[in-house]
Length: 381
Figure 1 (cartoon, rainbow, N blue to C red):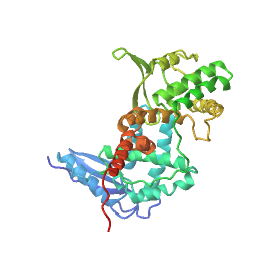
Figure 2 (tube, rainbow, N blue to C red):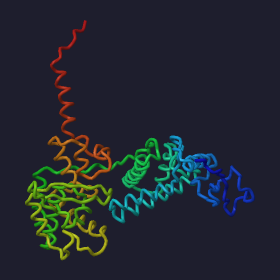
Figure 3 (cartoon, helix red, strand yellow):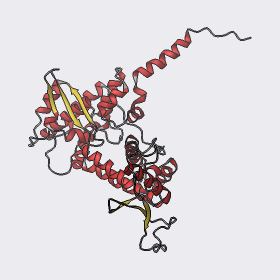
Figure 4 (cartoon, rainbow, N blue to C red):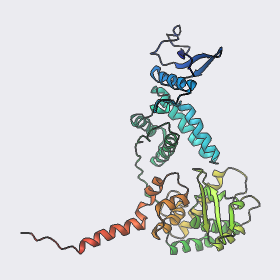
């Protein structure tokens, strides 16, 4: 099959001084492709403002129309299209509207930044560009913790681009130093003290029942507070083959599917929680999910304070998720398996938070040190 002749042309912006020349290569206006096939004229966006990148798009299209595979590394993916596809993927995963909104806003800022620096395709993203982009966050986001979360979401997009083979590697994104001390897991005595404090602190009996069951669920499943509070009754399943209960849901933050067995007594307590809504365990279904999370964070703060366990931690509820993870790691469960149970997108996230509690790693280090004690020291003269 012979490919038709493809022409690159420019559609100038209204204020471009080169409007009269559709083949002017050096302006910053969008480039397009034009060709005629079977007597019909076709037009397509090149997805770039760079003439050189438009040449690559032209070669790819020529190969496609002639039935040949494009040259490795020559394909370009318009950045705005890549972002739309990524957002659609997150939507397909069931990620909440709140989290989708954050991805949408932050990637739109990234797209505008790239456009300002004449980068219109995913292939133009590199470490230098990302370093300059991260440098703008200081004014955009006051908190280092917020900036670290924005970095995590940006890396999620870059990882998707790599998995889609639009990028040959994931470029480095500047690390964000967070001065805030990490939350710490609870031991069994602390957790029992926390449960006891529920009844001595919260006056309303319905709230007591919900908070007690919530603490049990989070500590035994590792669910984040928002995932726990919006848990559906149908997501609490009884596995007849294994004769155990399990929580099966998807994380709102990442869309990652999780399935975690929980003790029978915890499942029974959850099934007995009444909130007037047949669909959810805790949530009434009214209002915003963010609101119920904030309200229960206040309840948990009171309970942690009453139990003498509150130390000014950001999101005390995360200590329950930490307790679940660390309990598994200290008993030798591999890090990659804990990562799956937590619903992390990448094992690096798990490693960053919990590496110091990996029992097998520490046991090996201890063994190496102890082994040196049995070696005879050389004689010094």
